[in-house]
Length: 595
Image 1 (cartoon, rainbow, N blue to C red):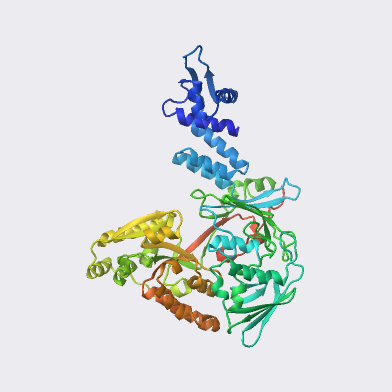
Image 2 (cartoon, rainbow, N blue to C red):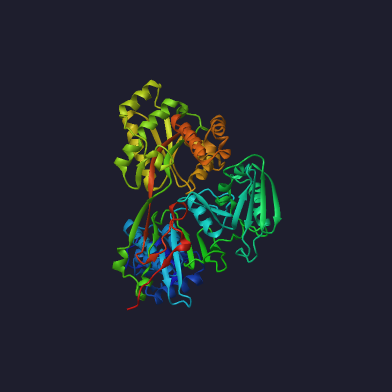
């Protein structure tokens, strides 16, 4: 069916613009060889198959020079929709979306096709299988980023790595305490210049070998060898001693009271020294990688996981740029309803939750590019235009709280005002503005586009020449050369002090690449004593660094965001994981009693 339908779509796309459906079309075999890109013999074979499936009527021409008559019996959209549904039902989501890209579709048809795609996402129970496997499918409306603990920088890929890999210890945000991970206990000397970790015995990597202290040491060395942007956090380590297969000691050049936070971070996910993670992702986490391509990541529960084996058997993450919903779906598919689970009507009544993310959306200036945004007065004009209080009130959506910091609790204590646009106009005139162009970059996501258009209109009212520069993803060279400022979003880990210091120090983010060396030196000087301080003093230092961003308008804070997820009322084990995502390893489906 697939091949015949594809051939029919090819014919319909080439011929229908000139001829309507159900009307004989004069054609020659030579003409059809060009359309179908095959030999005359194969054209005749294809035509017979299409006739057998009642897609066309074919009357061959009689005699040399006489045209044949080809009649297309079904509309192109009808066949495309049928083929799309067939592909999706067989799990060929990527091929289905490529079909949409290859053949132009109307908006009503596109909505129907996306509805078909959405039904395949979420949780599904497969009771017909011998083990009754439970599978979660998640779609992402962007491309996959690099999946490697040494270089990861996006929240979702970090979240996924947390299910594939494990760290020596974990940080519990509620109790503000560290919990055992691959290390069952640890200790530090009184001066905090030496830390000793005691590793669990019997922990297996996904490829079967037992973990030892050598894997821990080689994981750290891998960060250094690869030039990980997080390497700077580990610069205090002077020596690593393998005291045994299950004891490892780190000796430091100076006291470090923040050291444990480093070993609970995703960068220190322990990897096997005898496997290349970039080629074959192997960890000790609750899920192992079964398949990995640019289109899909398939995870399977690791039966030999040292902790509690996940209840969901398989997780599929489909990367479908510009097509999938930005709302995470944890719904059950209709398969569960056949086994006494919720009906379709009940499923609609499932739960939709919103939860605040740690971080905010903000505007970052590109100081690497020459322009009037280097003038403080111009950045202050943008500060008035990009007013958080006005934006929350006028645009709404998932914008939950005006931001004056990356941290919501700090923003909630700030008294926000709404200066009149006339004040911005006066600043613009006082700064000698001559109509210079300011190029604003933004990703083509719904809410970022809303903010860009909103800011453009406010700028127009005071005579500021803002030019919009939409991009699908932020490529650094493109930004540096073409944009003066851009809208972006930072999402922090639950361990917020780690998230903040990583934001200031990590060499892979835009703050590092778009600030001038002199600006980065100011921040580095402010934060220099950070690791030697106790938690309360570290918090004050981070606040001081943020005030530098805020007061000099290097960054314009916008809004804190609420994330949204939808889940079935038959879904249990709802526990928040990193970055506000649900912990997949805790999810399970409760189908209920059979009738």
